[in-house]
Amino acid sequence: MKDKLIIFDTTLRDGEQSPGASMTKDEKIRIAKALERMRVDVIEAGFPVASPGDFEAVHAVAAAVKESTVCALARALERDIDTAARALKGARSARIHTFIATSPIHMQSKLKMSPEQVIEHAVKAVKRARSHVEDVEFSPEDAGRSDFEFLCRVLETVIEAGARTVNIPDTVGYSLPGQFGTLIKDLIERVPNSDKAVFSVHCHNDLGMAVGNSLSAVLNGARQVECTINGLGERAGNAALEEIAMAVRTRRDQFSCEVGIDTTQILHCSRLVSSITGFPVQPNKAIVGANAFAHESGIHQDGVLKSRETYEIMRAEDVGWHANRMVLGKHSGRNAFRTRLREIGVEFTREEDLNEAFMRFKELADKKHEIYDEDLQALVTETHVSSGVEAVKLVSLKVCSETGETPKARITLQWNGNEQQRIAEGSGPVDAAFKAIEGIIESGCNLQLFSVNNITTGSDAQGEVTVRLERAGRIVNGQGADTDIIIASAKAYINALNKVLSAPERHHPQTSNQV
Ligand code: KIV
Ligand code: ZN
Image 1: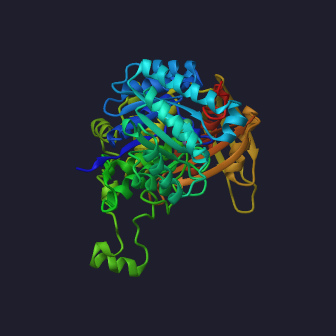
Image 2 (image 1 turned 90 degrees about the vertical axis):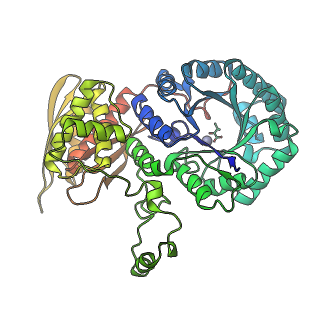
């Protein structure tokens, strides 16, 4: 029997710390349900003390998920830990993950604490968390740059205090695979009570080593990997879940452990996270990129046709490519629509939302003959967006664009209950549309990113647009989808504006004060 490698997904927590990737409660529930279907072992749902909205989202995920353990993050502070415990109430299986930094630079500059004070805080935090739940995880933040002897002392003490999982983060993505693997091996050997806890790793990708470091740790005894869908996460991101799962599975000859993930759900999760957060997946991304299984060159195709293994080490269908992409169309009824949504993990709790989504589906089916799962996901995202309370709503948009002429846009918005109209010119139709919107709202936001991707193939495909706006240091992403990319762009801009206008203050777990 091989050991189990626990897959701990932190898309909803570390993933959400990427600039602009913040998610609403409903979006978090949709992703959590998809992760549960994929049989992820632990879902880190958020940092409940960050804001009332974060608390609510963790609480809702805890109630919605039945098969996976739901985890909440807490700094080594009584208030954080008690808030995490309250947010997790109702979870079938709950874990509190508490952390404090242990590297000299973090202790001196951020915490302004001595090593002894850090140990004291860590022990208190673990004991406090254990007073709420059995399943407690502890992380020495920036372990990758911590003093080895000190790290051993911290780990021994927190295991003694009741931590069942000790997670070794390479917080700044500084480690190299050989070195990080050795660190894990040495820690397991040197910490006297290491057999009482699962050793976990959490690697960031600043040097592009997050997956390599995590796998090296697994080869050296780690039995939990913290990772995210598409490698989303703080700065350059975290280790990508799909790459970890497929590496362990494909190279089972090298690993003495195995994952319990249903890999056929990988592509679905990847697309869902990308469409909700507005972070597109690069075409050459391993496992989930559009080219990952495309054998373009003649030589490769010939090889693959003769024998698949010539160039393929994995089967595309094992990660969800070509899997049952049932197509709906103009004549599909409400039942078929609802059934397909259920099959891709979407269930509307309010009948009005289902009706609204069905109406949008019919409108889309008039413009586009075949509706794929990806179209349905985008449509569900829009329905959730529009069922929320929004300050700005798109009423209509007209654009004129002609060779040799300056493009013009006329937009009508509902803004705080009143309809207002503006006409603006721009260097292109998108620029004109954005200027017309700003003519009404005057938000003072800076446009940081504008990207268009086709959701499916074909010239009748919907374009999915991401707009990133910044105001006073706050960054948000907005998404919009439509067969008309100018309308999709306006929707995305308005979606981002609504987020900026309604965004509450949130605390960041790692950069806000520890005490
Ligand atoms: O990167 C990190 O150190 C973290 C911790 C909170 C585990 O995300
Ligand atoms: Zn992290």
